[in-house]
Length: 370
Image 1: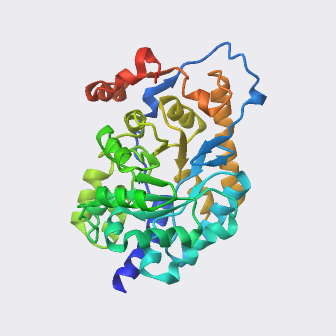
Image 2: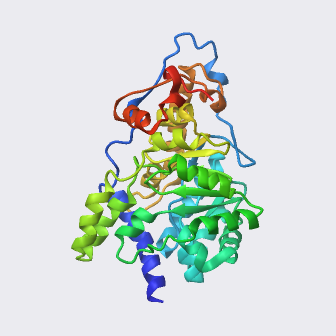
Image 3: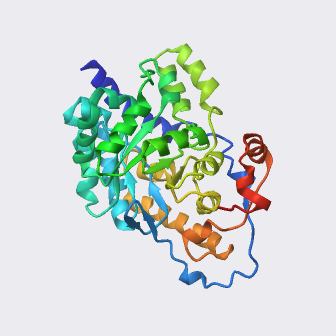
């Protein structure tokens, strides 16, 4: 029971830290990416359609509300308002790790509320890779059934686990477990990183394992490893705080780089990690992603001095959507799919890394090609 209480308590602590403290990586790589302006777009901006197909579902925006929370009584209302916004907007939404509910059934309601409030939305469940060996296929089926999910995400958060004193750092057999889940389930399986990115080599392993989509979860947005600094300090854990400082701010593969490396495979790529504006969404799709997701931009308006406000979440999504439409208009793209052919220039450190890694050729002549 101590472990269960610890897991549940960590959920609300992480949310509070993400909203109140500095946990965003300063350089997200998007500044090195520029879309080429089209002076003669030859389209009517009012005809731009943001509708996106993703894993068999039709979404009104190519932007999802990323998995964030659940597993603590105080998180139920937050999930409720995020789900309310998702249902109103016609967008996808994920829940946070359901490990707490697997450990303690009393926490299930904090996740179940998402489906209760958003009966028509695309919703994905969430379980950590280390939990696959502990709970098996039955555990994955439980988290799916808990929220009547349309898909399940298996998250990889070994950077965060390595810094937590209570972290699960036994990563043996995870790939085999993921492959087993993909073979056993009828639902789509998404594998998602949580802030350190996915390389070409790992994307290849995941593709061969049979995953339906990859969420790159790259370096560039909220750093859960950096969030551990504040938890460690509050608990007097000097070593944990030191590790958080050392690894929390620049360890990993940027979202921009991960998109390019993962898009080499014929499965959908979700761009997560530093998506803050509609321009970031446009850049991500021009680089090869199929859809984007973000957490902090929606969590902040959802948590307003202890209160939650669905209208503010909806307003934020509409703002990002309008930003995206302007970017699409100025690049001559009527649909998100057309953004994949938009001209893009990559400069700075991001270009240098891509060249050293051998992936700059995917941005041939400053234009992405298939």
